[in-house]
Image (cartoon, rainbow, N blue to C red; front, side):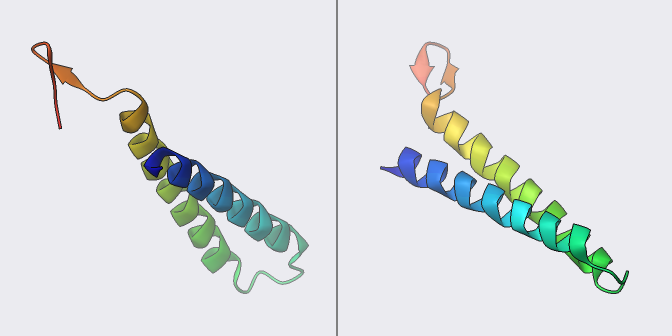
Length: 69
């Protein structure tokens, strides 16, 4: 269940970043561009964290032959 929710979160974050990038490319004025760039960067960092959590669910770390929490 958690893996599926993380996968869905990744898709939603990717969609949000794509939407912001399209808004950014269509902005005629530079006002607000910095805020949009920061928002895109924050989304991408969040996406990396979610992907990392998902990878840990896929391949939990093993230490000394024992599954670690």
